Amino acid sequence: MNILDNPSKDTWKKQLARPTFKTKQINKIVKPILRKVKRNGDKALFKFAMEYDHVELDSLFPSEVEIQAASAALSPALKEAINVAKRNIERFHMAQATPELVDEVMPGVVCSRKSVPIQKVGLYIPGGTAPLFSTVLMLGIPAVLAGCKEIVLCSPPSKEGKIHPAILYTASLIGITKIVKAGGAQAIAAMTFGTESVPKVDKIFGPGNQFVTAAKQIATKYGVAIDMPAGPSEVLVYADDSANAAFVAADLLSQAEHGVDSQVILVTDTEKFAKRVIKEIAEQLEDLPRKDIAKKALANSRAVIMNNAAEALELINYYAPEHLIISVVEEDEAVATIYNAGSVFIGNYTPESAGDYASGTNHTLPTYGYARNYSGVSLDSFVKKITYQKLSPEGLKNIGPTIEIMAENELLEAHKNAVTIRLKQLKKQKK
Image (cartoon, rainbow, N blue to C red):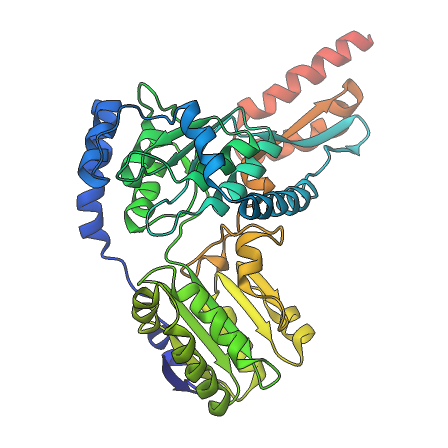
């Protein structure tokens, strides 16, 4: 990790730049995949499975035998861990439900709002170098709780033509039955356009590589919503001498191992502490199975020395990290100052891994600075808020003149007339 010593504000953009995507080159690959799936449906999915996953599939769907075998393949300890995480995630997301809002804003004018589930949702679950069965929980549980009518889960098959058993087990556990053996941009295309076997969905959720990310962004041009724009995973740790350097190093490495284009940032007040953390990173790195990936991610990463706490927090808000860990003496003051972060982890004993797996919060979060204007996935992500209004005759009389004068001054006579014609009718009835 390179050390930046009190960088001036005008250098933050350059010094903290995230790894860039080669968007044009990626889109040149992704767009033809989308076109082929749109045109050829299931046939294209089978072809891409052979081309990209190196497997000749008999079916796009796992059989009942495969699903039952997946459960048997997992250890009792892992199944219990998944169940504990499920309970916590269900509890926290159930608590996010809001009752219908009803308010009589003036006599005879009643406005209301209620949550209505998005009918068809697609969940993309990576299954390559890291099979993210935890993401099945994070996306599937709120989709089920929201009452989405149809839930489609896509995950790439192995060379044996199977979806990872932990993904199958977790999907089955929470009641997802539409599971498709498709990965990459072709899976996003299938959920965007629909095929003979894969339903077209209204909104697509889930992380993925740069090709999946590009495909999701293109999907929005075809009337399909997505959870959020997203890039590689990232973490920023804000720590002082009260923090444990080994803990900080472990947290930084936990995100660096995600991918070579991940980025991790340490913000601290002394060079001495930064060097202690870097030393710990070097020692812990050697024991990691994914150390080669982590090493490449660390080349994109920074340790930033900021002597002034107010400026440090300003820098953090500027960076807008996906994950923010706060391990400083004045943690309450720091937390209160943060307004740009996907999810915040407070104190020495709150590793980012807690949110990734089992604390109950959702790990599908905005990356690449999008925490400035996007929230992470929640129960709200799977519903729409519909508003309603009902006016009684008295209500129309009370609010009608207001509407008439506003419409008249916007030169929208038909808008005004929609009120006027009703008020005239009420006057006739009164006579």
